[in-house]
Length: 396
Image (cartoon, rainbow, N blue to C red):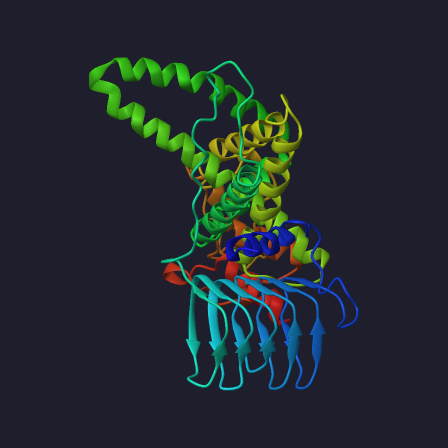
């Protein structure tokens, strides 16, 4: 079997995992799929079967043996044991000690590897520079000749699942990157999306229907054509940011279901992985209308992003003002300063409470019962961010 074919078979095995688990097999005589956890094979132990780890590290101690292939996605591999099969690592560091032995191919994509001179690799070493990633379709398909195309069946089934999984990887990586910059904004967007789902869907659908007409009108006007390009990029950005925000919320609910606290980038990666796997898979499996759920999801998240102006203003704005706690009535306390009418709604609650924190941090602290006045902010000018609250939740 070709190296790239074996890689894709093992990677597609990860796609079948929807509910995270520490291992699908209780003993060491079956295939293991570990989702969001680490795996250590102790000295002298043997695993008979394939090992797939998603978002975790793998440690193979001296004299340990894996009789099968090993795939690690988004984690590090440290080996002093024997792998009687292929080792595939995507995004991480592979360290092969002096006792390490791979009786198969070593494939590192988006990763780096360090090999002790005494380590042995019997197969090929495949990297980004030499990975056989060719998607050329057969020529002379006869699609325009009025007869059934003469297809090479040994190639086309390989192209479709490979491209499907490649798109999942792109979206997962994009979610991790964007989540690093929109953590506070994502909380505001999700609050509007899940709190006002109908309004978000209506606004998103209206934008999708009306925006193309407006952009076309701007394009035909030569002087305003640059404005149309900005509008197109803004719509694409709203769609992507909305998907990543919902992916973060899916990952957060997943972590709570497992009684764990994950960093936001990991929650975004897992959530986006599940969303893309489900909606793109539904589109592939259901003809004619398979695109409809994906379209509805895009309209919904885009509407939430627009309502909150990319997560910078909560929606509805009245909710923040109505839920603001009353000013302290202690006789000796100084009078509460009046809040101007043009004061941003997102800051009303913070101004009343006197705590320098972001809206997302304030909401999470209130939900978890944490006193923000006892925290030290890591943001600009000592502002308390949502990460400061999450760290407090994790440490308590």
